[in-house]
Length: 173
Image (cartoon, rainbow, N blue to C red; front, top):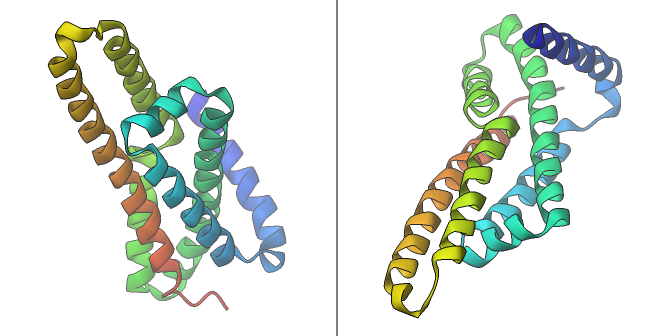
């Protein structure tokens, strides 16, 4: 049932988007979202940035909303590119579709929320365990924490950036 509702929602989005396709410059929208994500990811790639994310409700909601927007527009882009690929089997379109599929499955907003919840829980444990005697362990935990976080954020950023790069090689006219 959940899969059916998701599929139905996607089809509705596609229908609405198809009707407004000529009114929307999807390349500019993807460009803007890519820049906004890159800025957000850079901010989150250190202990202070993730601490702000975990502790600030407004910042957390804005980041999740940004990811939701990225996934919304990537889904819309997917159907535009799929139509192009179906017509002329364009190699760039094929590569774009693969990258969008990977972003939409492996790095969905739900997956990000799960990952980031685990990271925020780890941050809480680090904070609760900190005292003068365990400062070395604390620093080690922070480095491990940052390394995992940076790896995940870099994976998302790579996917978003590569999709943005692809669309500049596709002719949407």
